[in-house]
Image (tube, rainbow, N blue to C red; front, side, top):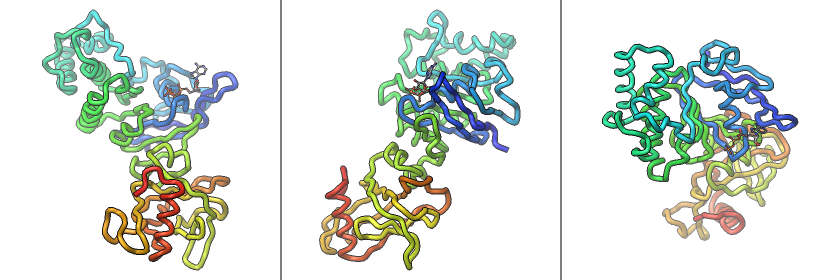
Length: 345
Ligand SMILES: Nc1ncnc2c1ncn2[C@@H]1O[C@H](COP(=O)(O)OP(=O)(O)OP(=O)(O)O)[C@@H](O)[C@H]1O
């Protein structure tokens, strides 16, 4: 049974639907990111899990129990926000200890737990330091220690690294992943940063206008985007219009006279071929013109979606190696490079 289940979760603010029928399951120990542009409903989803917002419809269960029936402070969740929200008049250790005190944990246990938590986030020597004398990254580590010290059944992270400079953010990403792996805490991370989600997550939930576009492992979402939105949102791509149909060799998409193999489930009709710029190699009449000897239009993560129909069903990935021979292949490279590529060759 999945550990966390969001079942058709919906949040309306008046007529505005911020989260629309969102369903998701998360396994114990997973780190899943909610990723999407500003306003797509990531924080609203997190706040419904945390209990700060009541859903308009839907259910949330954690380890089989109905989470919505519990008050926020009875849910056993850890939460880390973008702003570290530390008490400025308390040392790092006192900040971490605060939640334990509230829970009535005896002093001796508390001291040991605080020490362990600060150690876990690499701040073993900083217990006596006040927040104002710590860097942003260190303050966020204290906030993380404070959330982890209660051994939460689920840790919710809302843009926790977005206040940090680029270098610190990268360090903290590595640190967060290390901590998550070593402790095995189930985590939901809200971020609008594609690279962060790709680097940290077991799976990403790509959201758009309150709805889920795709749930997949990061590389899979990049290689096999379920929609044009996902293809565009995760890195750069060229979207080429074509027509999906079946011919003697199987199902293909015809783009400007060249047929490319695609997943068998795609419906007939208009479709989009996505070609990542880094997968394009140029050739000239079969002679080498690109960086790799003998390479034509190579690689090729590409996915297709019928823009007027449903999404590509999960299952067979798109064909890996389109192989129209010789000049035809070169023609394709020119089409992609000359017509659409922003970074081709
Ligand atoms: N209290 C509220 N009242 C009315 N509308 C709201 C309220 N809270 C959020 N919204 C709207 O719901 C939508 C989703 O907001 P949400 O904060 O969940 O987006 P987000 O994906 O987290 O965006 P960001 O990355 O900018 O934080 C937005 O259009 C927002 O304006």
